[in-house]
Length: 177
Image (cartoon, rainbow, N blue to C red):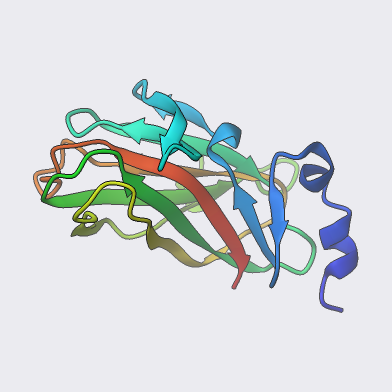
């Protein structure tokens, strides 16, 4: 089948951690992420005074992480980051995402083979505050067995990140590839 039964039975759907979207996609809001590198600020009033976000500094690397278990029928997934800027400035931002799954019982969790790193992406930031940007950060990443985690990193100390204001991470969309 199309995985609809597994989709509707997701524990994350019941807990409200993730929000199902049309077309076998899930929305991961910023409230479902935690900082694993750095101490980014949260912006409760958010972008456009409507959308909560994590403010990732232009001077310090910040990484946000969420835990995820793929629905039945997902062999691979795409991940899109939804972000904006809080203050208008010029320059490029540099980001990277990774996905690591736990594997089956008995798996060596220290194995680098469990990680799927996305490319380092450098792109122009929106020219004005409150403009939405959507960046594909992982493409057709195998989800493996068991739960895993997605990490989104702003590489602020990378020489290619020249944007002088915060990147505001508003969430991730995970989709069946």
